Length: 302
Ligand SMILES: C[S@@+](CC[C@H](N)C(=O)[O-])C[C@H]1O[C@@H](n2cnc3c(N)ncnc32)[C@H](O)[C@@H]1O
Image (cartoon, rainbow, N blue to C red; front, side, top):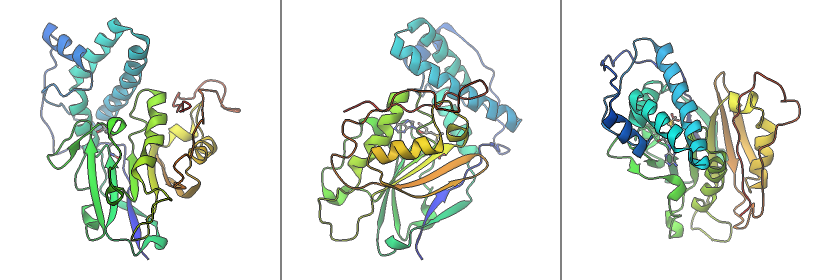
């Protein structure tokens, strides 16, 4: 049986190999640079705390700031935006965040059976938000991975904003699977998250095109588990319904580990799937009250 490897990651960073120290200094210049772009890569050396708990705390703080930043930008609150950008830059910016996240990556792999697709060579995979170019190296005999990221940490990762990425021009350049591992939750704006889920369909094989080999149309999605188990606005069932409405007609498999939620969806291949579909921000029944997080995906009608 042929399998597609999927990364199982620990969110607990282990950073024993990195002990560089940095004394954080906030200057006027830092603030100005930060205001230019919070997630840019101003060359401030990344700092890694000795305690993995502290690094994990800073990663969580970065997520919070990133979401707040999206809100401020939408609301045009430039003063708060400048402060948030400055705090992110003090932490080391996106560059620090990515390095810290890489350290937390656990190279052990879990496998999702894909026996139907065993004859597909090479299997073309678009790895969106790739911290390493080698995520699928162990499977290079049958997986050809194209890693992209906003801020590549390696020369073999293409610098590309997925939301602005033009769909493949030719059928031969389409992918068999698009991988969104811990990327959707990283995006701060709920509408952009919806776009992140819609956009992969343009990179997969539409059913109208006859391809010389079987063409699966898969979306591999990984989210932090609390995004589906403890959000006011999102649940496992809500996600499945949303994905179905967007044309991901089948959830081939899902798996919830202690920290992460893994999903493998199949897109129908129908070009107009999901047209006119809208999902608003709405507290789900049974998810009212405190102690919940605000992870939310909004889909705007196209
Ligand atoms: C938490 S890391 C996840 C990395 C890796 N995929 C994993 O599973 O560990 C999120 C990554 O997504 C990238 N990212 C966020 N939005 C993106 C976009 N629109 N296009 C490409 N990469 C994006 C960020 O730059 C960051 O490196």
